[in-house]
Length: 246
Image (tube, rainbow, N blue to C red; front, side, top):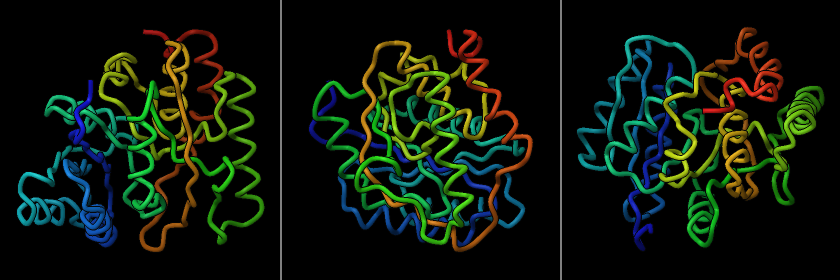
């Protein structure tokens, strides 16, 4: 049973996010939530993001931590490393959040309230439930591709969620243990889909709360062709019972 003020760890993978990371750290601190911690997982960023993260940790001992990794081997691997560290350090709730400011920190209190109110296993910050939206800067073809990707995933896997590729999530610690997090090996959007698939396979409850997804202002997208191809193939692999089972 989670206590009234659970330990909440926000896991943020970074690669060349030195300008965005301090802004995000400030937004999280400004929420004033007791028990809220930030864990930065830096993949040896050449722009010095790791040094920025270390400075934040020195300025906020006990609430900001840094996990330095020696190579960049994908968003999924970074999340698994960070979420595993968070569980080892006693997190009751683990939040996945991007460093590029596309995920609104202001929605975290609602996500926590929704997660802890009942039998919810994970809460998704969703662009596609009533009240949610994507960035106005997105061209029509990008919006269409995103909507199609979610339809594609749900048609194959029947996840029953509107935003199957969402990367802004709040997890109960026991849910991450139940889905055998260390055995997940996918990356990119397929990582998000695989985690959702494992939750659904185990009969656990996913809920969604609306968010406005913003376009990054600084830095460059990390989405590569290899990640896009993996994401397209992942639902079929999961359907065949490959990585979706543990």
